[in-house]
Amino acid sequence: MQSAGVSRRTIAQIVAAGVLVLAMGTVTAGAALASTNGVTTKSAAGADVKPPSANTCNGAVCIYVTGSGLNVSDWSTSVSLSKTMCTTADFWVNGVLFAQGQRTCGVNDDLLVADWSDPGNFANGTVLCNTWSGVSGEPCITVHS
Image 1 (spheres, rainbow, N blue to C red):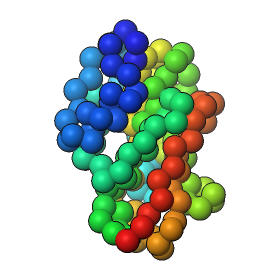
Image 2: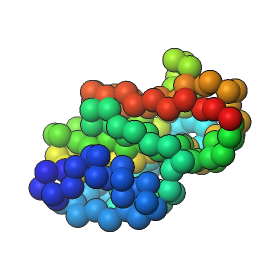
Image 3: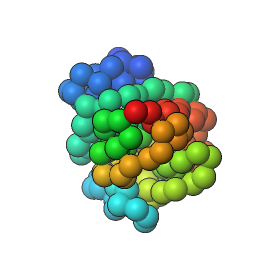
């Protein structure tokens, strides 16, 4: 997000503080409902991101997990686009594709967000990861009690 003067790392810090303020250029219109497991995908301008219990970024992709102990009450991911493209958010549990958002399109410098509200309980040591099709980066978080 060079034109907005905010890095992906700064966005993760802002989200962690419970505040998401973005200065964005053109944003894709509307929110698209996801195809599986209650995942919703939208541009960051319309995103309702909750303060995460854990978050990290890898490449252009970030993961935000909210919960306590082994319960995950919300799992979000974002991607900062470096070009105009369409992409799909993937939610991985221990290396297995568990949920997928709907294909969403954006332009250079857009921030897209996919959210899976109330994914539930996971075993201690479960590794949660996110990817977005056609974009480098796979951040992961380990669930623990």
